[in-house]
Image (tube, rainbow, N blue to C red; front, top):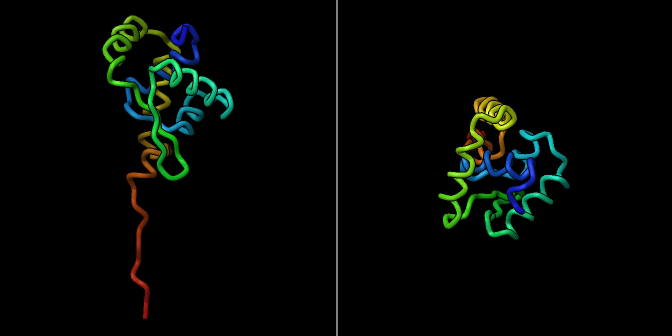
Length: 116
C-alpha cells in the first residue's frame, strides 16, 4: 500500500537516488504543498520505510536499511519513468545551484573579524 501512490514513489525515488533529503527540498522539487509532502512522508515513516531526524528547523528523511535492498529492486523497474527522471533532473539543477537545504547546512557563512 505504501508504494501504491505515485507521489510516494516519487519521494522514495528521490531519497533512494540522493540519500537523506529535507522535507522542504522535496516540496520544492516535486512542487507539492507542505501538507501533501508531510502527509506522504508520515505515511512512509509509519509504514516502516523511512526514518527521520531533525536538524535545526529542518527534518531529514532517509530509507531504512532493512528495506533499502527491496526498494532499490522495485525502483529499478521504474528507472525509465519520465516523471521520475524529471524529478531527478530538477534535483540536480537545484543541487548544482545550491538551492537545497542540505547545501545550506554544508556551506558555512563567511565570518569577517570585527574591527576593534
